[in-house]
Length: 337
Ligand code: AMP
Ligand code: MG
Image (cartoon, rainbow, N blue to C red; front, top):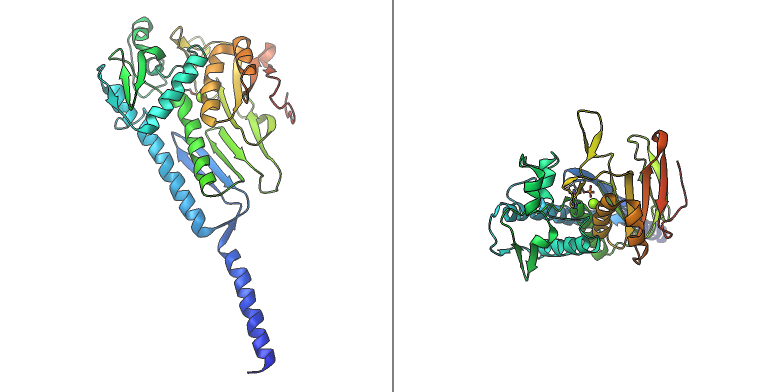
């Protein structure tokens, strides 16, 4: 064998060795999720091996399926639906996952003085936004509504009124985003974005090596972004009256967010409220609560809380909007003030 031949062989082997791993990798993989009655997306910055990508996608899929199986009220066989169907004040054993989310929901309820209330399910049904119908008068339904009427006892949930039912729709999406982000972190990824139905967690850098930019939607549907902001290390969630609403006979509309103190759909000048918080579960629940509270009560509450910021987009005259935000809400990158 000649020297030249050996050299060629060595160069060839080196070439194959250096190219092969790259052939097995995907740059900046991004894929869609369909979960909790909505759509989502995951993007990872940088190259990821195909094997690793396959397994991380699988784990994320399973994780979200579990969240759905535990806390959806849209299927009758979930853990939450079984608790709801139980017309009894007997303690009901549930998974650690459900205990964690209910505990968290009750904390947010306390902190927002009941503006967030996970016991609104019968009201949500009554107003036509839930999986069932409830023709009973609001005053009667209100007797089984109130976050103090449910408690967590070790690994069990207890109703103090047999008719009480929980709805975790205002916190579950955020919880799902947190779970997906946890899967990615555990797998060693540091640069990624997770979004489910508009609730987002972004970490590290985007595929261009810059900070992730996310958008706050224009509350006028179909008009694109209202404001762009850089997101890193915090979660963003938005609640608005523009996504899920019904129209009354007189043409006025009412939203899917209920004011738990009146039992009526929340009515205020809030078009949308976006919340930045350390976890997406917090951001999600707080956005719903702040929609009920309005800017007047909501801003001081959030201003006093470390790591939490909010942007209210308020309906103004002549179909325009005005904004009010806490001092820490990034005001850069306004696209359409
Ligand atoms: P979100 O879109 O995150 O604001 O969540 C709204 C959903 O949460 C509604 O469709 C209801 O199922 C439920 N919900 C409505 N009002 C409240 C409330 N005041 N507190 C907690 N959950 C609520
Ligand atoms: Mg919410």
